Length: 111
Length: 113
Image (cartoon, rainbow over all chains, first blue to last red; front, top):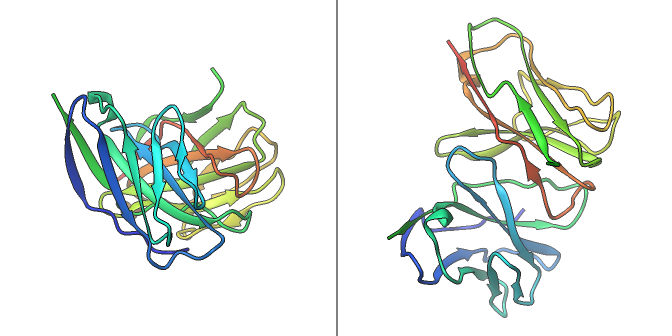
């Protein structure tokens, strides 16, 4: 799987948008970008995924650059409950591949 | 509520003892996974099962075994626990192997002394 690079931590003000970057410069054409998050003492939770088009769901938006070498997860109106570790993962959509989680970005939303 | 149930929530175990972590899902998912989470190392895949009756090795399978006798249950066994197996263990499932969305359990915290 392509390697991803995320900042180890970031702070965000409550009510503001949180923009979480992820670099995946070695991504190949068949690899998707996935985002998960893990709130303290809970299991990871799926957020969103995409291949090359921008995606939006009820939780977040995913912006993928045209060259696909980086992406940004956007939490439009961060709340205190969004404080978590956010994982960016790239992986082919194939049953031969399993999700590998790195260290992620620890996001702290402050009141 | 549909999801994954893990047991025990927490356990302290003497080194050398046998331990089985239980995982049950009620979503009729075909694929199931066991991950361990250690500080600074993220989540690492231990074993997986694409469907009932089949299992496979993940990144860190040594010292662990699994079985998948039916769709719902996927127990993880430590035959002879060692202190390096102190970790938080997460069970997960997906509708199909390689599916986009994994559902995770709440985790089992294991301490081996």
